[in-house]
Image (cartoon, rainbow, N blue to C red; front, side):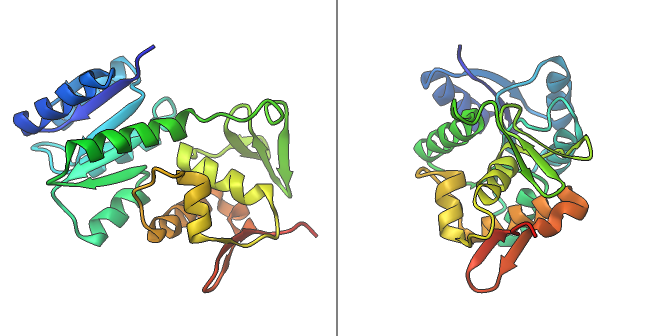
Amino acid sequence: MAKTILVVEDEADIRELLAYNLKAEGYEVVEAGRGEEALTLLKGGQPDLILLDLMLPDLSGLEICRRVRRDPDLGRVPVIMVTAKGAEVDRVVGLELGADDYIVKPFSVREVMLRVRAVLQRAGAGPSREEESQLLRRGPLVIDLARHEAKMGGRAFPLTVTEFRLLHQLALRPGRVHSRDALLDLVWGEERFVTPRTVDTHVRRLREKLGEAGGLVETIRGVGYRFREEG
């Protein structure tokens, strides 16, 4: 079944360019020219991915991303921000709000298609057969690989797909230090278009969402991150 992409872009020529090429790649495409229109479409159905312009005439892309991440039904939908704002602070804010990737205009269509494919592959990558029946327990934290869910005391944390994969990779090998580059390979894969700074942003968000369990993810200065060993 074809994946559905919601393209949220107020510039008609860019929106049509993205829609045309996504359809050529075999995706179903839904288009919105304004933020409120996008939110209305999202209430009617969940897409497989959102291509989201940051600067819209009514609601900002950041606000839409914030609302998507707070919605229990939409919180795990991958979001790629597409915007003319290329400053590092804008990229960091977008990632901190839960965006899975960030593309700066002007962009090449091929780059967008590659990033869409890479993010969808990460979102669709489920656990192996050996992992499907396992619950990974690390201190008070329970990581349910079959459900792609992390819990503590019966309460599930609202993690994005990328955040869950990051937590899973760290928790698989407690005590082992992972460099930022190693985590990029493990979590984002070979077709990654993000920098090591992205790892820091996602770790910070992950800790915030884990609350009191956030201390299980430790920073090793100058090296990377590790999941704290029990005991």
